[in-house]
Image (cartoon, rainbow over all chains, first blue to last red; front, top):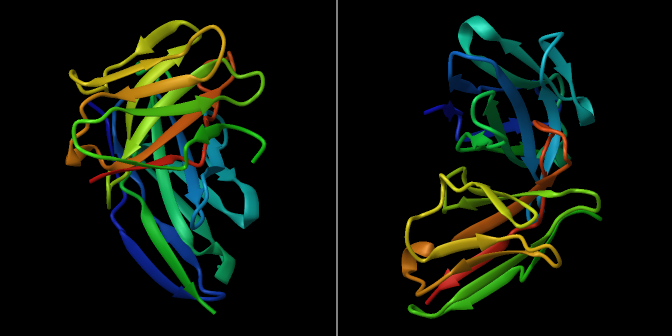
Length: 114
Length: 114
């Protein structure tokens, strides 16, 4: 069965610092990859997705992620965080033999200090 | 979010009672997914439904849990004879007819068992 690991459970940064959140998955076949963000008290919102093509994916709010197939990774990055980026971030994977089911990582809570 | 609507937002039940969680997908979406998020954990897939059909229920507990998505009306996740361990946030997501589309999430129902 596929699994998704987010190694950083809690991250604290100051405004303008650069962000990288790790995401690794365990599945050898074709995958579709997603990052979702959940702001306090709100629903999950899609930040970006990768289905195929350019492995460097641009998302909303200045986020990007890079799919490195050899490393089974899909790390999320942002060059300069803002206080409003304080939220929980979830990486999710859909394997091509798993129907439409998403497998989520455990989430990373990001706190940005003003 | 003019999208996926879940109600109630919060539900409190005593052990042994029944819990019914409702989900109305986004307009034009005919695929519904239910996920459960236990405290301090990521979302775990439970069930995937289309209108009047259960497509994948591999994540559903074998007993006490059931889901439906009738031809008319919202999708219902039903938990009979609730126990303390059922306390969690239950999220519904929906997508269009096309496979492997990003899923759009509702605000979730937070179920507390006394």
